[in-house]
Image 1 (cartoon, rainbow, N blue to C red):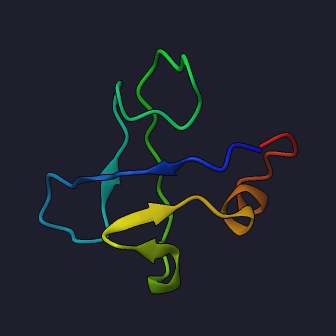
Image 2: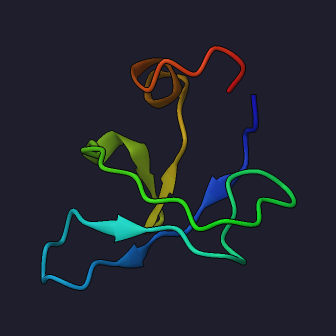
Length: 66
């Protein structure tokens, strides 16, 4: 599992809960494609204005290897 912290960009539809990941803001090293994620982030997942990818998030996406 990757324990990196990811900064999320504000969404384009004025939704404060919407965000996208783009190249240069990877979850995994050498990830070459943009990643779009529809996931409700709990306030407890946010640390100093960034979202921490937790085990709960990975489990809910059913990614066994993270």
